[in-house]
Image (cartoon, rainbow, N blue to C red):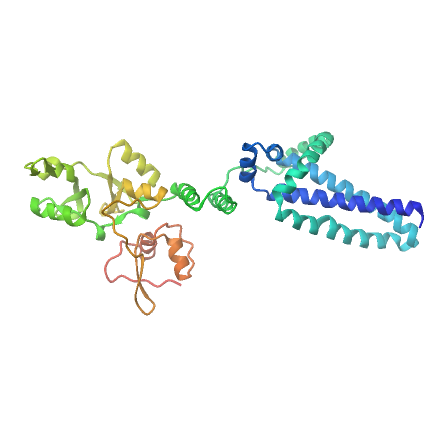
Length: 388
């Protein structure tokens, strides 16, 4: 075979391999687990630290990879055309287009990208030193492309949205958890923290129908019985009806050193904190801290009592269930007949939908909030609705 043809074939093979290298590197940097690399860098891995530095300016990194990839692909196409025209004459250009396209697709794109997706961190760390050199070599071109990008963005009025959505943050937490950087409990804590700011008082309240409260006209013996039976340290006090809560009674104030206090209930109860059901729980937490309260009365749109939220309820949304010696384990889903269930209204709506295999576009957090949303009012015994 003509020595020139042999040199062209060798050059083609090298260029196809380089094309594969650039494609694999692009996928590796795009798919690598940034948290895992950061952890490796903190443990002294210099290659991981280099990958992190390169990722800090991803536009320049991507521009360098694409410039390199296009240079080798165009060079391969040119050498292929020369080679096949020499071998096949007039149809050589057509043959070259077909052959080079197939080779680049198989060995320069599909195969290397699939390999890189399976081990992105390893490939990114392997490629990082070479890419760093290429970034320096292509600095003038990267500068020009950067100016071009700014011009296009200005002409088309494009704005970079650097903020991550809640969904993106939740996906990131799941990715980190699957990568083994954090365990399941830490992942749940992060997810709760991300979702925390979107939750409202109505999503976590104890509904009025489940509320343990006492009438201001009740005898102290009756109130003591409620404290004993409910095992709560604080009880709302109402006058005439539950819609008129006038105070919060603390067990520590109700009992003194000798037994039940001789003071009147009005003298020892504290002023209740009232908030609307739409109050965000992060703001409610601040209110409870500022007023040194442990409980807030949640009002509906008409000013009636919808329920209560305690400081413990809010903290449980962050850290999960807080158990004490008086808590009892309750079943959230209880079958009561064929295709009939009794479900705790405080269960998470997403968990409820997963359990029963249904879908809803509601942004409400709890089942109770969703039921109120469907009914358009506070549920009462006998209420029902259809959902498809």
